[in-house]
Image (cartoon, rainbow, N blue to C red; front, side):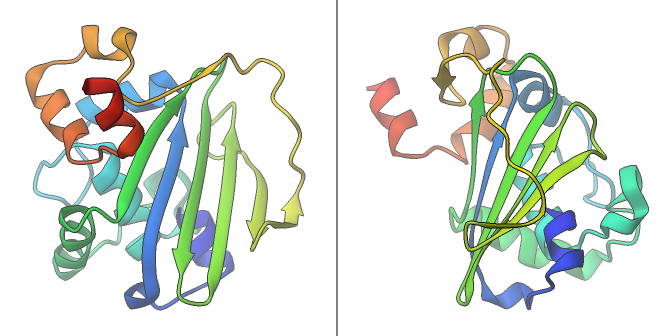
Length: 174
């Protein structure tokens, strides 16, 4: 998220929606790791919103180091309003695709193999940096609430995931 923000800055008030697709390992880690400068909060939705609103990609793995307490208010509001969506796809290595939809367009960043390896940045679907190659190692797509993922989650993880449910997740649960 921060990779997009730093390269193509937008006023955070213009962000309409954030959509993130991650591999199962990233999904699981997001449930268990405290996010810096959030008073101990955990969760993929909070992390995605933090990166989009106030992250600084020039800090690499310390992307949230300079986040101010006031930033958390806008982040929590986005999550509470259901404007942050996280889903999971099976990949053989680390994979994150983050898309920010604003009132003026969309921007996406794709990260593969390591947390700092941004392989592509797209603006309104057009590659402006890097390249988008099909990941032939990708297995069938699955929602964030696949049976395999749910069987390893703690109750607190399930509650966090429930905050990010989309229509496919609701259909799966029914």
